[in-house]
Length: 343
Image (cartoon, rainbow, N blue to C red; front, side, top):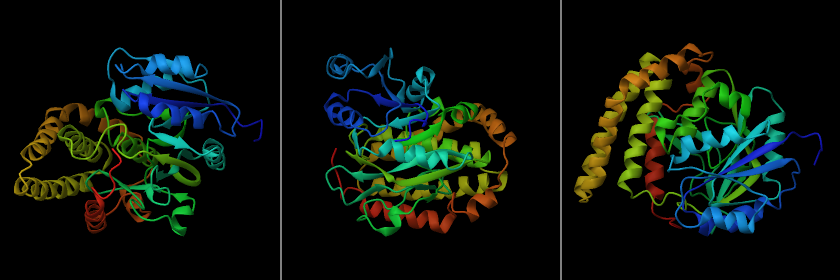
């Protein structure tokens, strides 16, 4: 590795993830990149995670928080402790290849307008199947994982610009991350990476997928499966935040109407299958969005004032997917849900 490559701060967020930490930190200890530090930000775990890391991985800097700040604020706090020019966010439930970090740094160093580079994520137990090969933003404000649950193929190994990358394995320019406001702490967890990447595109930066940077993900390890009412609540509220903050007026209204129609469909499906709590979670997500609407509008003004790229350009480049494409991809995702469950 070129010794002139800058220092990178790798932030591993943890909440009661002791069972995952051996694989994660052992693989980080075998990186072919030399100038990096590793920071574990612990969201007030009760499973002995911090003590375990201090004893078994003394080279990892442990930052203990007094309560569970979630993914968004937890990582933002980690950035405050970071010394590197670049910051890499990494899930605790992954194992990285030795070249994981060096390939990300190569990708971001090639173009000063690249705000973030993301890794190829493969399933830990089925390593020829894709968890994430870059992503796009749907018209409903959600993130779509390209290649999800598909066998690895040639097009998953092509570097390219994408709408978004997964916060579970991504590298960012620290100065740009801070300039754009970092992850929005109001999200707590889910789609905050989509929001950050979309804000970066709007402000004139680029997001890049680097397939030579590889991690193996224990899917659902950190936060459990999709069958959680709390997770559904966060999905619902946060994607509405994404719409309200980031879309131009015409697309804001179009996206909200599309979202409402999709909500009616989802609620009816949950009720048909007797999943009342899941249906209620969607309604609660909408109510939470409405109750926080004034604060969201303040954040919207900040994003829109910094706009250099129009929604039209983002649709044309595939950063944001239109209605037809979004619904097609959402249907495809539901088709695979439940077929892979390592949680």
